[in-house]
Length: 361
Image (spheres, rainbow, N blue to C red):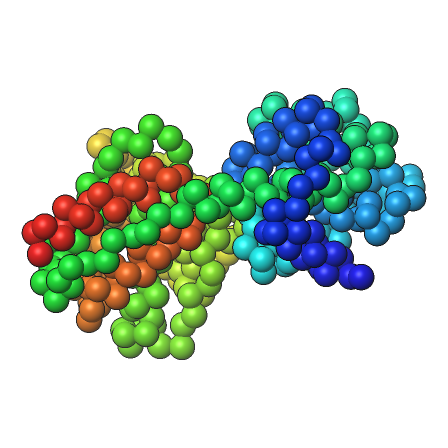
């Protein structure tokens, strides 16, 4: 059985709710819960653990803690992940990295995953749970399949709970630019008291670009790259921004001189013709002169045009270019619903705002 078929067969057991919990200790079940709860924010750990577990099922003699071929008696976990595990996780709809969990710096250190592994995994509970589960498999000979099925069951449950039925528009023909901009403004400004809300403008612009690359002649023969992780570093994602149409990138960060200098570095590295920097708050007061100076320097030295603007103003501009606002609404709603980096509260808020809009239409 190939790695892919093995992973899918274990996933199917989880879908059928096969129960292996009685074969596992309370400590193992507790660690599984920690990994599953954090898997959307710690995709690297999640992916690496699955890779190690699947590899162990196929190669029982291998010490899976020795995860690099350059280590004595080791194997290439990253290669296996890149070619077999991450593509399969994407196919079955489980959390995954852009390419490999081993591109996460805290997990790529050239040391075995023993209980005293020194990699700086940001969440200490996740690190402890990960290393203890690997130890249970390698040292205490716990069947990795039992752990994976229980892990997948919990992740599937979380995914189902995160799904919200987005309300359709009652009278889409009455939708106006001002109404939908007002809706987006309220959604972006709301204090969610949790992270990931900064991805909402990214989804809005991605929805816009899905439309305009087909409707605006300037974007003829352009392709919109799949939307990457909003939290992934440039090193991990191998891109210069969240959204890319060829080499045009969209970034959503406060616009100050530091951001412009970072943008300048990315422009030199990725060589785009245009580079957009968008912020809800616009340009920081007092930095206008220095920002304009950097923009001019980049234009003269590189030829790239940096465009800075506010999110709402830019969205309003693009709304005027698209032919059907309902298409935008439906696309944006779908992206909100399927995005696994957003929290339930982000989806519920969009539903709440849509219900309010339906009363107006």
